[in-house]
Amino acid sequence: MGRLEQLRTLSFQEWRFLVTALLLLPVLKLSLRGWGFKRVYARLELASPMVAGPTEALSDSDILSLVHMVDIAAYHGLVLANCLPRSLATWWLLRRRGVDSEIRFGVDRQSSDFHAHAWVEHKGSVINDSDDVHQRFAALE
Image (cartoon, rainbow, N blue to C red; front, side, top):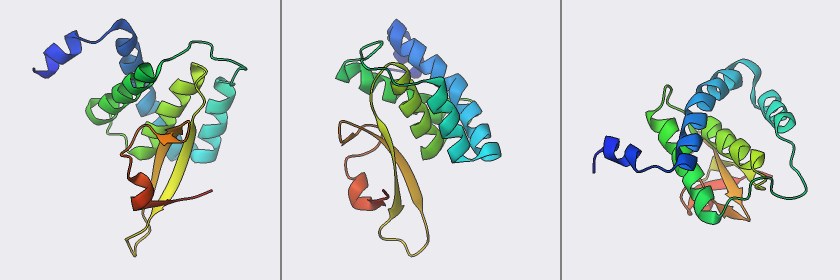
């Protein structure tokens, strides 16, 4: 199945996730470059305060769908987004829907050079990276 046929099979919700991610990722990439992580994270947190319960409950399959749409936008969108804007977008989109998640950072365990990485966890599980990310990167607290 070609890419066009795959796009035709997306649900309305998947389209919403994809379009939002396509618009959000370039903004995040520029904002990170200009303001840095702390300021961007703080502004995103203010723009989407967590509520006591989910405002728009997402099932586990919906969460995976959101992650997949962000990945598509990150690799095939207007800008190539590395792990940090991709993880920020995933975290923020989940947060806006009342889904508790965390951005994690780690450093490469094998390299003598400094290599950092970011990913998102939900309920203690990695959702936007491979399951072995903890073996490849030492998580920072």
